[in-house]
Length: 501
Image (cartoon, rainbow, N blue to C red; front, side, top):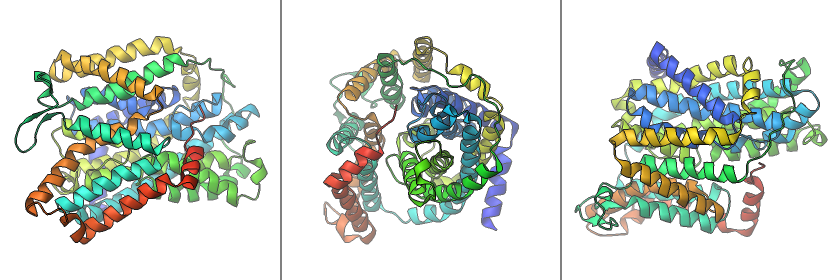
């Protein structure tokens, strides 16, 4: 009964005309950035964070969430039509989706992606609604020691599940934590790493770091590797799948929904892992494994359902624990903070309309995506022909103006340029900026709970091992790190997470 009351409250909030409008704006923007290769939801949300300052909290979060899961839809369009995934989780969709397009079946492939994503998103929203309250109640029992161990687990698990070198991912997390210490000491007020610069006394601006690392750096990388986009079909026809297609889609969509809902909670890149895992499962259980790689509709419906389900359930640790599962969720935490809200278990009880409105808006957004995506395929196809050299100046100017408007401080714009260059250098060195952002967001939380736990225990470091929950979390964290460095696991990660761009 409580669940129904909460959902009713959420639907009442999400269906307010203003919130529906922002949800629509979010999913359209998300689809657009998913379609346009090289931009992606992370950079888009980072650049739109300054705008959310002037919006109501629920409207801002609904719009940003819409951008995220809308991009999961949009990424499949480019993957199918031009074999160029607009979003990393859509890389596996390109394997069979593009083959279907080459055979004149782009319409059924796009429809399979949209319908599978809608079903998975709807189910994952229900999972989120059911799981969030009990997890929040459990989180309220956590003390500083438990939160410290939980943050350590989140950071180390993100290394285990991230692509690329384990050592480089660990280095990026450490660098992110160090950047998070810039400013005044949380207890004594002593300046740290400010180098006499007055603007650094308040710490590094989150928006500047995010926009630089994911906006400017990605733009520089994409300008270096601009490709000619050859669209397979100028006009998509026969969108609706055949009865045989629908029959073959049902089981993969159901399996992928369950798999994606579970993996989305994991730190690092659950939606990417879910897509690849779903493809692997479908190929293994299929009666026609030889068709995979040559236009099997199961290879489109399964991964697309999995990544969309994972995109929804990745909100669970954010809303219940205040911990981001991946960089997009870290940016969502930034949006909460900009609105003066501390994400965590207290938010569900203190601001139920906000939390349940956000959850309900995901279902509204999935309905809007199905209604918009298929009829507007022609528009998305035409967008693919826009040269990137035309897009990037507008993106950079927009990001700079938005960041400057937060505090009318030119220092924030200089910071964008600095972190943009730093991000580009890191990318060229083979380092992913995503773990850095997670370290930057979680670093202050890690330090605060470490010091608070030691103060309460009068400096006794064994407090983290004598408390059962804390000790269990640390054991799991060490296990995740050990698994990440095992040769067999490392080879597997390199195969799974390679981006087929």
